[in-house]
Amino acid sequence: MAEYLLIESRDPFESNEVGYYCELARGLVEAGNQVTLFLIQNAVLAVRPSAQTPKLRALVGSGVKILADDFALKGRGIAKLLDGVQTAPIDIVVDHLEAGHKIIWH
Amino acid sequence: MAKKTLNIVESAYRAVMEEQDDTILWLLAAMQGAGAEHTVVLRGNAVNYAVAGQAMPGLTVGEWKQTQAPRMDNDVVDLIEKRKIPVFVIEEDLAARGIERGELAPGVQLLSSKSLPQRMAEYDIVSHW
Amino acid sequence: MSQKTFAVALMDAPYESENLTTAFRILDAMAQRGHNINVFAYEGASGLAFAKQAPHPNPVHGKNLAEENHPTTKDQVAALLALAAKNGGKVDWVNCGMCVDERGVGEFVADTRRGSPADFHTFCEASDNVLVIPTK
Image 1 (cartoon, rainbow over the protein chains, first blue to last red):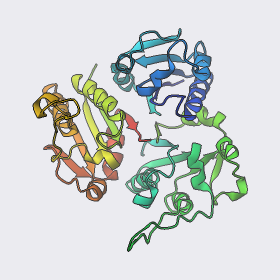
Image 2: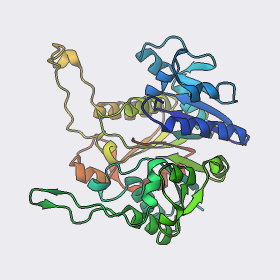
Image 3: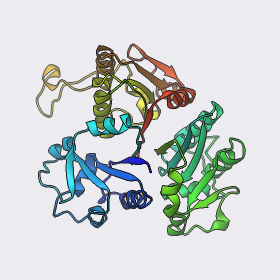
């Protein structure tokens, strides 16, 4: 079993490929890994409770830990997050690097 | 022994005309020459790199003419045959783009996206481009 | 946490992508913790340390040069190197040579250097972990 930090910088409104990345996160968890999905930059546009983002919503409760970058949220005026998504500082990237986890940026 | 790296390449046809190469496939070929151990998975639009018979017309601007326009399929074959870098394409992404198996350059291997998590476990480093 | 060595690949050119803001935040966090950082600045990122970048005023917002305090990535690179040194870490910032040549950005911030893909391979082999920040 390995640990992964999947960093998603794209939003699902502009890029179809975000769906693939959500599926990859799910597949990694189902394969027995620990997975954190860290939404940064425009990816945080998907986390408002009222946002129409079925693929992200489907990941909540799947075993993937979903985090959103506090800097990106603040910059975009997003204060309320979808249930199941938590705010996190950029330092978590270094935490994961230090721990030897595989870090993949999309 | 070098660390094994899996490179998932998604970005396609970005700057290939100016660079006369895909910048990532080129980088991996150069690193392989320095002793790296790379594997490539083409996904998304990058699966089109594996389609045989591509022929970018050279760019012409006034009297300036490009003489070494890129051939992405040739570069894929070069990776496989000369650099010994295995190249996989995600079969679901081929199907989505209406690309048949028979259209692919020789030596390209198919991989289901469902197998990617297991495949990733086999590598020391996984990079997404 | 003991000192680690990280390899980071960057590709984005200055002023074109939010990737670089995030990248510098991560690099800053690494340097704050005293880690060694090996950066391979590839493609557009080979211009991040270009010494001849110059800030400008902002006439749309009525700000003069000083008021606008326009960021330049070369200053961010220099600041990163200084921060790392202060905290006991070493930064080896390599600008990919051919990328530098084709962009004409061959004058770098002090203590960054010209290199090649072989350097990125060496970095990956020598590092505790690798972070690749691709361009779109």
